[in-house]
Each structure stands twice: as structure tokens, then as C-alpha cells.
Image 1 (spheres, one colour):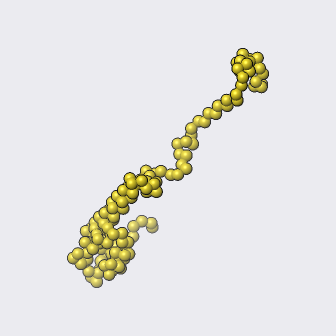
Image 2: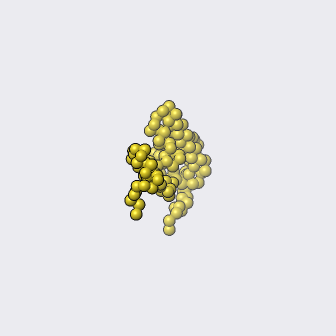
Image 3: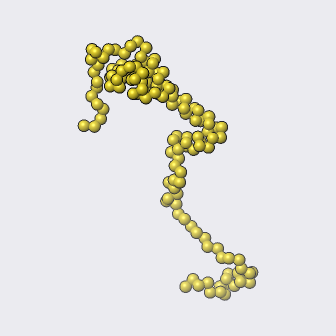
Amino acid sequence: MAGKPDRVKCTASQKKPPKHTADKVLEMSKNGVSIKGIAHGLNISADLFRAWRENYPEIQKALDEGREREHGELHGALMDQARAGNVTASIFLLKCRHGYREGDQGDLANRVSVTFNLPGPQSVEDFSKVINGEVDRGDD
């Protein structure tokens, strides 16, 4: 059955998180440390860290807040680069934030195309003959 794994219960040997664990999680996550890295930094297993996140909302909140701070900092730095004229940063932001795709024909696919074939240069006399119907244009 697909979906979330069963809720992990902390056993007696898996004590409560130490007093300043949420602060440590916040600090590590705002610096881009992965879940495994945070667990390693806390000297616990990734499974125990998952159990703590499920059973202690302040731990999950610290992780989420740290990731949001990292996101804001990275986005701000990228936006500063784009505003300073960095074309690559501008293109990246267009693609990520606004769905821009290079070469996307999107709304052009259903447009009607009209082609006009204009005659080449003619003398006034030849043009007058065409207008007056004196020349067979080969329409038949």
C-alpha cells in the first residue's frame, strides 16, 4: 500500500530530544544540511530523527523554518544577481518561478498562418495591363 509509512513510536531507549535540539535543527537546516546530515550532527539515526519530527512538532517546525530561511536567502541572492544584469540568473528565475520554457511554441500552435505572395518589380505599363485584365495571370 503506497503512502506514508506508519507513525514511528519512540521507545524508552530513544529518549526525548535534548533541550536545545530544535535550535540545532534550525541552524543546520538553514545552512542547507540534509536530513541525514542533521541526524548525523545530532548523533542519532535518520529513523530516530524522523520519529522525533513526528512526535515532537517543535523539531519539524525548526526543520521547516530553517529550510524556508535557506530558501529565502538563496532566492534573494539569485534575485540580486538577476537585477545586477546576470542573464543566467534571470533566465533561471523565469524558468523556475514563471514556467518559462525555451523554444516553447505553446499558444502559437493554434494560430492561423496567412502568407501573401507579392509580385516582383514591374514597369508601370506591365502593372497597368495586369490591373486592367489584359494579361493572362495563369489562374486557370
